[in-house]
Length: 83
Image 1 (tube, helix red, strand yellow):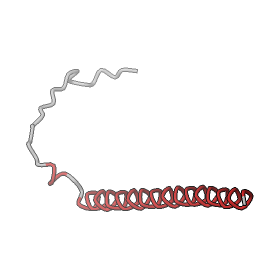
Image 2 (tube, one colour):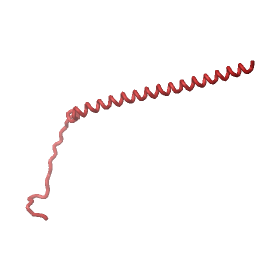
Image 3 (tube, one colour):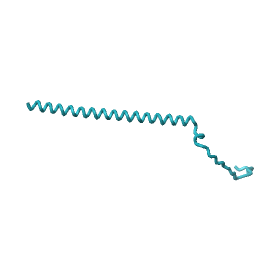
Image 4 (cartoon, rainbow, N blue to C red):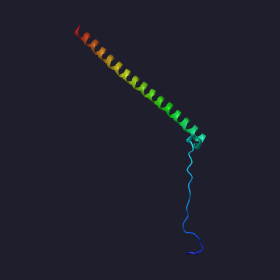
């Protein structure tokens, strides 16, 4: 249903381009949250890396220790059986 009472059928919008620095545009709260999140992520990643490194180191150390102990026990048994 067209009423025919509209006086124009074309509208021109004029845009004004403004150069605004991004620091002025960003919400300081969002910026702070982003910095906090980045800091937390770095801390978590470092903790995980250290934990994995320690865990792997302990695991390898235990494995090597068990292997060495088994080898020593076998040598002792062999030397006792030869006598």
